[in-house]
Amino acid sequence: MSSSSVLIRPSRIQNFKNHDCIPSTYFIQTWGCQMNVEDSEQIGLYLNQIGFKPSKDVYSAQLIILNTCSVRKKPEDKAFSMLGELSIIKGRDQDRIIGVCGCMAQIRAEEIRKRAPLVDFVVGTAQISEISQIVENLLEKRTFYTSLNLPERKGSIVSDIPQRQVDRNAKLKTFVPIQYGCDKFCTYCIVPATRGRERSRPTVDIIDEIKKLADHGTKEVTLLGQTVNSYGKNLAEGRVPFSELLLKVAEISGIERIRYTSPYPRDFKTDLIEVIRDCPKVMEHVHMPLQAGNNTVLKRMRRLYTVESFKEIVDELRSTVPGVSITTDIIVGFPEETEEQFQDTLSMMDEIRFDGAFMFKYSPREGTPGAEMVQVDQKIKERRLDDLIHLQNQITLEKNREMIGKNIEILVEGPSPKILNSYQGYSREFKLVHFLAGRELTNQIINVQCEKAHPWGLEASLT
Ligand code: SAH
Ligand code: SF4
Ligand code: F3S
Image (cartoon, rainbow, N blue to C red; front, side, top):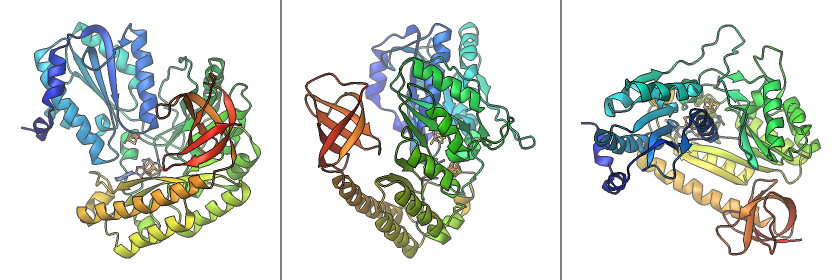
């Protein structure tokens, strides 16, 4: 028996027992990054086309889709745990349809089938647009369905861009993919295997989609790509540098704020830094993953920059764009990382003083070079992560304190769940801000005065 059986939570099973499924309803459980969140939205749009509506919870949904992530072991465990529960439900209620898509579906289709034989379909990251057809087929005839092709690179141009639904509901902030896949092959990372080779979306498609979004009320877009600033290579119509794309997006009226994630450090060049300085719609926030503060570790990770060149980019950014906020990702306990090398990461964090960081313990991913290297002991990884989080939390709070007394611009997203009669939004620097207000301000861009700093963000008052 698979280990998933021990992970089943009886309470959830009970809840399913108390609910009949409602025909033509769906529930999507999403793990992973913004790309997956965006994919789930796309899946919903495709399902709407065949008359499916979102269900109010997982228990009453006829169609349950798990949109999975494989970047670390934890999200994979969560998906297998839920699959274990759903297998039991499906065994009792054949009307339910269970599908698995996303990164884990792409690379573990066979294992998914073995561990959860009652799953109806497994669909890879490049086949999302097929889901509505698959569901229609399944409603007619119940046979297992799988679709997992990833586009291969033939020559330098990969024009195989996923089909998309671009007519979307009005949302204040919207993710827009501009690049798919990744060509970097960092030795710890599974993403090139799950998402395929790097492909840039044609500029006209991106601009058309964002124009539509602006017409429907979107004020802020976040452009998505695994190495978003290498956008534009391999385009059939010729290279369009990322900085140029930003300027084109900025011309769209109605779009007030432009963000992007994640840029790759080596390709963060002066043209991009100058666009951040000169274009008021491009936000003064850069999420630039460093991963480690030691050159030997960076080299073994196959990151194509050094500690020194990373610092140079940070220096240029800070001197060209005063007040820019910089956040990062760090992995501790990469194979063979010594205590001294980890201390180098701590020193670098102390020196650079990022505004915030996502920090992870290295998680070996089968099929990546890192998984074959000599692993660091789990306990050591845990201690290193604790040390790093402790240091960064302090720095984040100090960085937030530097904002006190400043006048900052925020896009108001709605009422604050933390503080009564308050609203919340993000500053240009991507700091979460709560502020008291006696009137409705949702969807507006306003200025507030920073008064108090917290580890999670800022409290402010109306100016
Ligand atoms: N494309 C982005 C990162 C995508 S994955 C980039 O290169 O910046 C998001 C983050 O997950 C990475 O930045 C890295 O810090 C972390 N990560 C990726 N693989 C990991 C692994 N095997 N173990 C732990 N963390 C990992
Ligand atoms: Fe993974 Fe590296 Fe590509 Fe980012 S750049 S997705 S970390 S392989
Ligand atoms: Fe996870 Fe895939 Fe994103 S592995 S982080 S969902 S690209």
